[in-house]
Picture (cartoon, rainbow, N blue to C red):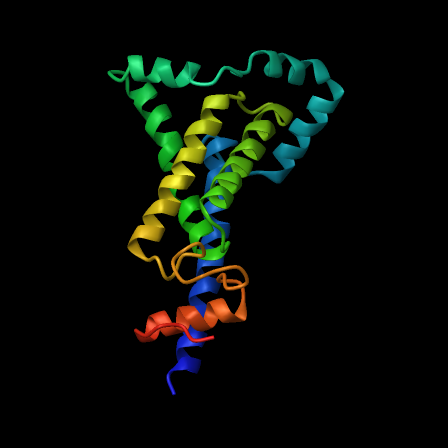
Length: 196
């Protein structure tokens, strides 16, 4: 019977995807918070202490934040001849495409759940930029990042609908994190349909 080896393979693939997710989140923090610099927890601690000692700095960053939806996006679209604006516009989308793929593979949720997860990760990173005084808050980054997460989620559902948590055939209690979800993934890997 090939179901047990296929189930083991499905679990191994999920474990591998979870490890890749951790690596991806590290890279995300490195890019967004550290601007490609060295990731340092000690530096974050110093920044946090400095922010707590001088809360006016955080307040200043909050007042400088863009809280008007589509203001930055409109500016980027008007200046597509500038590489910086192209990177900001499309980079904010591309950066979160992998998150959407991981959500589809690991979370067992639908479109709304994917959007909420992408928005939540983006919001956490945008707020961290203010708290750690390492960047600026921009509501358009939330919009573009969430869009990127949805693009990745949609790509995963289109290319491998049976392997995505919100894909066809996976209902409530049947997501990738459940034993039934693993059996269904194993059946997909075997080339058959999942049996309850």
